Length: 233
Length: 233
DNA sequence: CGGGAACAAAAAGTCAGATTTATTTGTCAC
DNA sequence: GTGACAAATAAATCTGACTTTTTGTTCCCG
Image 1 (cartoon, each protein chain N blue to C red):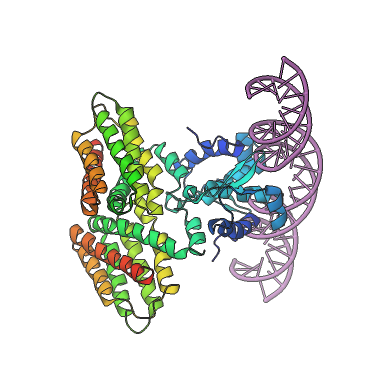
Image 2 (cartoon, helix red, strand yellow):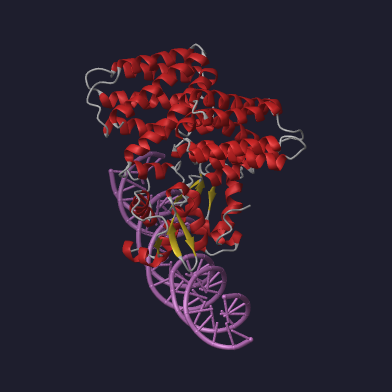
């Protein structure tokens, strides 16, 4: 799970990062590197490396004679995948899931439109394969199989858009979809309408119909937003 | 300019970061911390802190017995404001500007629609003020004044959307707009149609007309994309 | 009594050297 | 050729001393 098992400073981040993003320290709180080093039983060098990383995420600011001060939430690099993961693991996961889903609803339709123009024939094939996989796992509580193909589908769309910024949102979408399946209630099989829409998007991209691909993807994301409204209105 | 003047490791990053994002080292290149420390005339401790930061940006990966290996471009955290700044300062600035503008064209219309529902009356006033400022600076080569109000306008829209992820794109939009004004050719006064659109968006938000605000903002971003196509087709 | 300058303390920042650990690579025997 | 074992290598870690900057206090003079 923790992608950052490498090195002692990674272990420190695995516990200190979530503590900060969870709001454990109110903005302006001061931490002292020496105390932190003692608490985590690591040397100051290691602790300093960890602080530098948190500083690059704009979670904290280190100043001489003062200490390591926690920055307010509005300063955080909320697009950092690590920060996203920490926050999704925290208490206000629902709020994160919502703001990320809104971001998806803005980006994915445009990405799908671009994918219809830029996708290679190989990517079109992948897309169709993913959609078929979703259909095959749409009944009988095969949620994990469904999730796998769903994530792959949206990754391909984002990558095929040809836009680097869109492509890098693949991990974010994966986290959101995984969160929806695992944490939130999803006892029943996925909505058949959503499955159909994915198949149709694959069709539209294959047929180079950008306008249709965008419109259908917008329907998917609208559905995702409605799902959130139902769960937490 | 360099926000990271603090500390020696910041100075190292200011030169090593741009070198990497500019493609100075092909993916897979190995750097050794000792050599880097010698080159920058800093201690290994400082060099290690710098490497940790680059590692958190997924620009490099540090492995025992191997060294610090440069990661391929597709791994980079391209949403990190620091990385964005480094890349915009580099050689393929036009490509960055394009992909960022496409991102804008996806996000800003949705943000404007949300702003129409969520904006406080204070934010509505700010919006109107910005639009008026743009009008006032739209003639007579007052480009700097125009840019200032343009940036402020889009910042308010993104902030007023109420979505945290959108709000944090304010800096990105500012960089893109500044880049368009300063670096690319913009001898003439801004397009009068664009100025009018901004005024109308402010109107739509004030009147809580989400659909109209979104549509008008989409026209603005379409214009921005066309501008890029004219400059670098 | 008030304001400014000098001083002292605190915490991050920096450095150099010793030590540890993991990974790769080469070698040797089976 | 394959397996295990050994050596080399470079990052990872720890430690302790020293430096720098900021902040707060004190003390002196107006």
